[in-house]
Length: 240
Image (tube, rainbow, N blue to C red; front, side, top):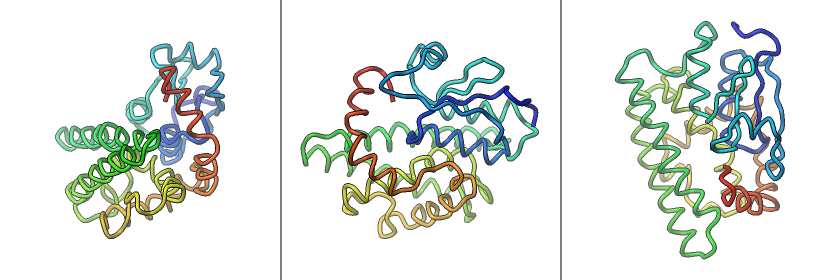
């Protein structure tokens, strides 16, 4: 690995699916010697505020003191800054690379954008509509998986790639949400998205995922007790 000891520092929050993306990427590349700094998102550190002044969000990767912000931009940075630390998450072919970026963006804009509305909804009608939109986005991702994987185990083919990390960061949280909200929310269920449901099992079983993603039960407990107050605080103060 090109980075020496002490060169990489990750600012994050234990429950953040965006931070999980970065941690899984680093573990997949064998970059496990980084320093992790847990942030209190109700009282963000001066280091976080100065490292990401535009959005004040985690995760932030500091490489030799220089910040890189936004989870999927950090994943791209890891590919480019550490080319010898495999595997590469983005394909070499320009069209395949553009396609991977498109679907990763779709995950955040169409799936997460709808799902977060379901989480913070104040009425049953709002929640049902948002859950329906999130489920529809996953149905679209079902087709994307068939297109991108070409019959293999992951969006990236034989191993996890850029789109796998984008959607995979949410797998444990989707399962925690289903424990809290009930299975009828219809996310990643075999009778609706069978390819994605099987993919989610494979992704969650990866050593990199098992090493960094909290237990679903712990996330469900956090979701039931603490998540809504935190989300309302962050959404009101330009955080995520």
